[in-house]
Length: 75
Image (cartoon, rainbow, N blue to C red; front, side, top):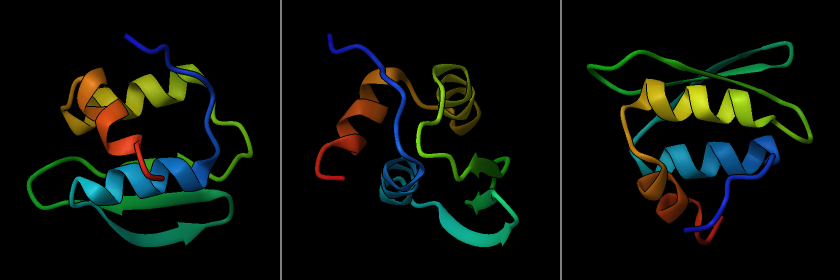
């Protein structure tokens, strides 16, 4: 099982868009993604988003780590 590593914000946006999330707005360095029926995701536009933030985003999206890594392929 591959380990999670810090990722660029563009890769995170790509992975969550594959799950059906849409970018709603951007306020300074925060990008908000929404999908109907779930809480919005707020992704900071950092060159290296930390593991704590990535883990929180995965939990908020309601997916497991393997599904997230699957969505990351090709991003």
